Amino acid sequence: MAKLTILDTSEEILLASIYAQWEGPSPGGPGIFSDASMHRILSDLSPLLSWRDHPFIVAGDFNNVFGAYVDSRYGADATARSAGVFSRMGDLGLRLAGPQAPNGNQADPRPPSFLADTRNVPTFVTNLGARTTQLGYCFVGEDLVDCISVFARHGIDDWARRTTAG
Image (cartoon, rainbow, N blue to C red; front, top):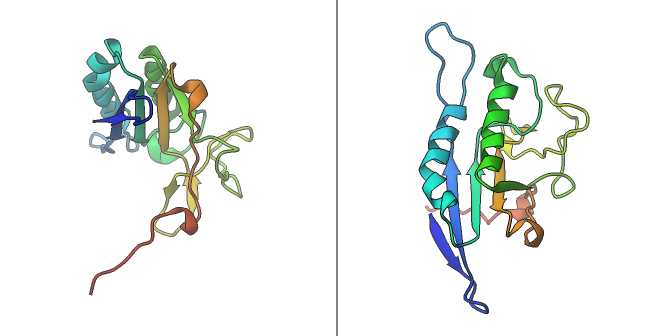
């Protein structure tokens, strides 16, 4: 958690950077999941979101996919489980700010696990360098929806320069 103060106006915005941990299946169970981690995070944030007096931004690695998708690694009910996470975000007064196309490059070719009309942009890169799915998102309170743009940064030129000591 952080509080950002805009110097010109003294407006304060609360920021939550989150990471939903992957969890393994029960012995013999299907796939991995992270919706339980997201629900715990949202439970922890609920008091701040319920009685907030500041604009709020929640961003990070949700490890859940917005919209319908089919991927056997996550079990047959993965779409419904992820939908529950994103629905709860809305119930807490948060709206998806992005990144969504056109504010980022979509996967090309589009992975077969995604619907043709998806606006998702890859934020996850596999060990082999493939950009296949979107797991990172930014949600904001209704008071910020019309004043914020969220972009996916795909190119190496968009990232901080990496250096190695020694």
